[in-house]
Amino acid sequence: MEPKKNPKIAVGRNSGLYFALGLNVMLLFTYLTLEHKTYETTNTTIENIQMEDLFEEDIPITDLNTPPPPPPPPVLSAPETITVVEDAKEIEETVLESTETDQEEKIEERIVEVEEVLVEEVEEDISVPFSVVEKVPIFPGCIGTTNQELKDCFSKKINDHIIKNFRYPEAALELGVYGRVIVLFVVDKDGNVSHIKSRGPDKMLEKEAERIIGLLPKMKPGLQRGNPVTVPYSIPVNFQIQN
Image (cartoon, rainbow, N blue to C red):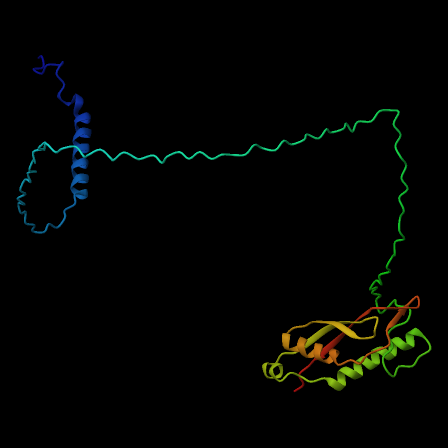
């Protein structure tokens, strides 16, 4: 018995392709449905605005027969005045002699006298450190035969002077300011204490330390090779608050 179906026509031959196409179409439709967005709309009124056309009025240009302006009046020139000038005086020309020299002309020798030049000696302000000066400044009341004894006496007298004239600033005491102040000063060639500088934790303490050093008496200046010299010196001043 022969089959009734045509073997050349296979209905299920492309069923897989059709299934895939249908599946993709459904997925696309589902995606578009999920991504679809709606917005709230408000009632708006649309009004018609009537605008009138503005017509510019053309003003005709008229040519008026106006007479031209009169010409300017002629300028009257002033009459020329003739002045009589006397003849200029004749100027005698001066003949300039040549200043060129030749080999035969001798040059006169001139003796230039040089006056004596006075050389003014300027005293140099030599500064020698306290530790190496040959003879240290002598504090009033210090007696010693060696330079080391004079150094020890100088340091002791300075400390006694600080203790005697020490006064704690009231403002610094109330604020609880304390610390060490290094005071620098020099004993100049005349024995005076000058160039007082200080460095410390607070301006109030520095000012008080400078005041104490400024009360030092005049001293006998230090000597280097028999000549008075400036000797710098530094000393610490301690400001402490005791309970």
